[in-house]
Length: 397
Image (cartoon, rainbow, N blue to C red; front, side, top):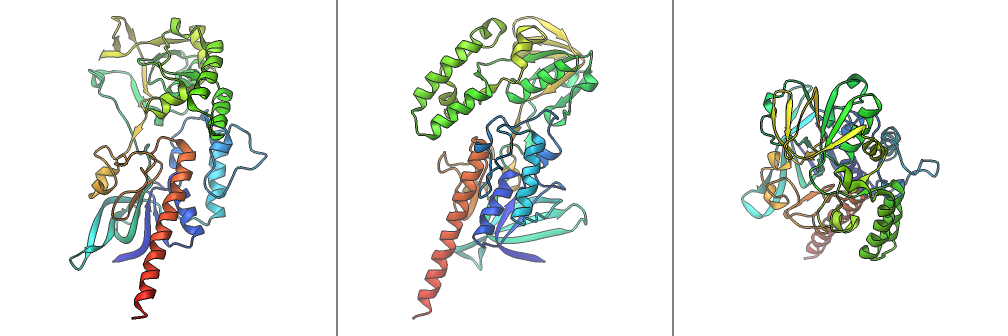
């Protein structure tokens, strides 16, 4: 049996919820499919205890529902999860859970290459039934964080200790007294290292490339200035001046700054600045030790590029995530590249050809998700209105 609707949204994380709210506001019929048994599963099920939003709340709301005045400027994961709950209730969003999308492909009506629709085949993981949906538009809302990225490290399969991805990490309580290596120096890696140290683990973190370290306040001020249309070069100069005042000593601990300023570096495809939540003081006091890139692993021994080595009980891969949309979107070429990311560059990344859209894949966080959802809903609304106008005109002849 085939169920027909106007839009099928795949993924009920913040991207899918934002898309559903925007379509609902315009009374556009949609079906929202989610593989997990809840919405926002990364926030609700696969995040560590001390996770918090790194940006101020004014940059972290979804469309048509700003955060309350009483909400803290910087929200914990529990506060943001509660916000998602209120968002779902407010817009009466009802995802269909436990739906594993196996394939989505473009289908043409009766051999007419000018009239097409998307067919989405799913497995209902509770009943075991195969479900088929047909829609004029397909929105890929599985985001950039669909699947844990596991790096190819020589000898990693020989490691005898505990090896986990950061998505499996809750807190450092059970690692007290153990020697732990964190691979990945983004915000997750730094926060997990800090957490491990506070629980008494002997913590090392791999930092192999330059990165910016800023405080939450520095990032907040910089983003407000950019929102006011100030030059990115001017903003970078000011924030770098502040950063040098607080973090000028970091090179002697193995942390080097990129040549570009923090916001231009990010906009050019580089790393997001690391928000200092206490890890830098622990690096300075050697409670967290910085080590270079891994050359190879032999048993519990990890060999580093500088010739040193260390023996570890645990390795935590804070190496991020990747998109897997190209694995289930058979005709991904209309909107995605071989890596499952938008084929079109920002700011036109959100729209593909033949009715496929992708949101939450611009690397701009929740603000980018909100912008994408609004643009996609407006575009679909305009296309539908044009179709209705043409149909009405034809009836006169």
